[in-house]
Image 1 (cartoon, rainbow, N blue to C red):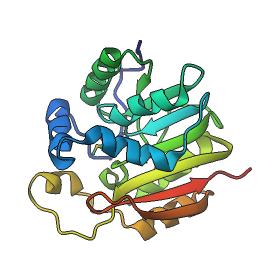
Image 2 (image 1 turned 60 degrees about the vertical axis):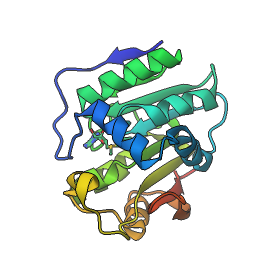
Image 3 (image 1 turned 180 degrees about the horizontal axis):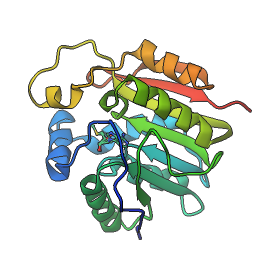
Length: 214
Ligand SMILES: C[S@@+](CC[C@H](N)C(=O)[O-])C[C@H]1O[C@@H](n2cnc3c(N)ncnc32)[C@H](O)[C@@H]1O
């Protein structure tokens, strides 16, 4: 079952929103050569989620990662997904409902997460940071740190910027790319301790894992 909250009014954000939800899923299907499930599981292997944990996916889009995360945390865990695009969230809810999994999707901005301090064991964000201008990225990193419990884990995945992108992907990269060093610096400046970073081994995606102060 899926609970929907806080749809109106839409959040104010300087990020680049995606509203073409069905087209977005088709694009992911194309880019993963029909293996999106394996791609999401690969990302989740970096998050090391455990049964009973509270997890947040920031910029969850159509919900694929959050839905996969729900399977990892089991019936005693909770998974929230937030996104600034109501269209993406509507599709995410349909997908969670079809999968029979409870994921709580909320409309909100990554720069001002609609959660109290220290709510989550793990916060993930995939392919979202490059949508934000520099200031928004800094705000988002601070917000991730704020909503993590002591010793909580952050996982950020984004394009490493080693390729020149045209066509379909170029549209989503108007704010530029987020290099691995920049993600490391953003999370570090926000108060997190970097655990490790590296290649996801899919296109030029990079991951950074970090930990909140204990
Ligand atoms: C490329 S999609 C990635 C979606 C999903 N994380 C995934 O891995 O498929 C980027 C998402 O970030 C959302 N987004 C952009 N700016 C945002 C902001 N300021 N706050 C929250 N979500 C935002 C877009 O609406 C879009 O759904």
